[in-house]
Amino acid sequence: MDHVPFLIIGAGVSGLSFANSIRSEAEKRGKTAPRVLVLEADNEPGGYCKTVAQDGFVWDYSGHFFHFKHAEIEAWLKERMPKSDVRKIIKRSHIRFGGLDVDFPFQKNIHQLPRQDFIDCLHDLYFREDKKSPENFKEMLYARFGRGIAEKFLIPYNEKLYATDLATLDVDAMGRFFPHASMTDIVRNMKTPDNASYNSTFTYPRGGAIEYIHALMHDLPKDAIALGERVVRVDLRERVVETNKRKLQYGKLVSSAPLPKLLDACSLPYDAGAFSYNRVLVYNLGFDRKGPENVHWAYFPDKSLSFYRVGFYDNIFDEKRMSLYVEIGLTKDDPVDVDARRERVLQDLAREKIVTNHELVSWHSVVMDPAYVHITRKSLAETARSRDVLAAGGVYSVGRYGGWTYCSIEDNIVETRALAATLGELL
Image 1 (cartoon, helix red, strand yellow):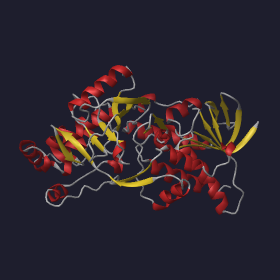
Image 2 (tube, rainbow, N blue to C red; image 1 turned 180 degrees about the horizontal axis):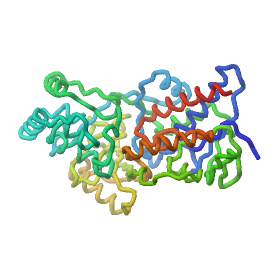
Image 3 (cartoon, rainbow, N blue to C red; image 1 turned 90 degrees about the vertical axis):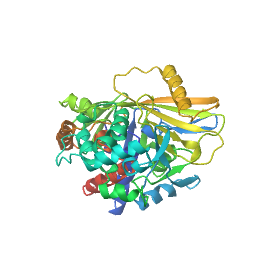
Image 4 (tube, rainbow, N blue to C red; image 1 turned 90 degrees about the horizontal axis):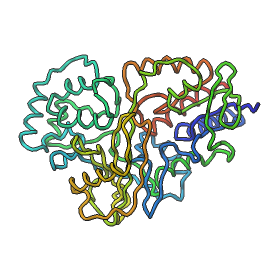
């Protein structure tokens, strides 16, 4: 049986990052880079960072914009894509509220609302019941921001995104990605705007997010990635992985597959009810001419609209034709009639005057399943327990879905580099 020192499940950002990082760790220690093998069930690499080029439009599976906090990681990737037109963009985003475009984040820009809505938000913010220990995400929103801000934007928008009751989510379900603001921040912003957030700038290549995947593949041996190879079973005791094509023995196994799927493959018991999630239906739409220009993406809390977010690819590279991604949150069981939902999306885009007399000339759709995991007290406990059991068998579950968490693409690289540094001590 073929033995692979470092076997990896998933040729997305997490898996490819670890493959690079463990080889680099060996070189730092003056040792020969170990053999790595990345198993990818799909017939092409990338995970959700795949890109579709169609009729002159370039779309990702959804808007995958890179927000770098670590200049070294950004530089490392760009060095491996020297022929790419990579742009760093100052984000322009807003919230569509009652026909107005309000700057993001909503809670710091309530002064831009119609007068009565502004008064409602400010009054409820000041007189909010500041519960010191909220028990769930919805309670946290009411406690921090009051009824007005919570019910006009934060609750309806996030319920559309997560396709669930926010009372089921953990208080810290969005971690550092949730734009908290104090009373002082909110009042100061009325006169001295400061809407900085973790994604105030983003980096994006003209060829789409797949160019970052190609960068991550740049230094790997040609035989390091096995496409169309799906993991069927993992024997933790014997450290053997069975795929749809062969059996492989591993030294260490690193997986970015959704954690419940990995646990199933390992025949490990777990509380299935702890791992809830939603799906996202994404429409990529190309039109014959330009649309709104001063925006990269917009948020739509109105529940009478089918989508929760719309992004504008054409405004990144100043293209002459409007190129959109449109996102719709679904439960894991919602039926998907692609044609009917597309027609509803076009109607809603027209209602919001994003589409006027435009002609749709190209389109593509994809269902991201899973999309956003639901971080709850049960999921946090079950994830921690499961990862301990897996680690005892030399298995490490990483990334947004492997870790059942909310994180950025760069976070996946940081996490897998740290794991490689730890495992590198065993080389």
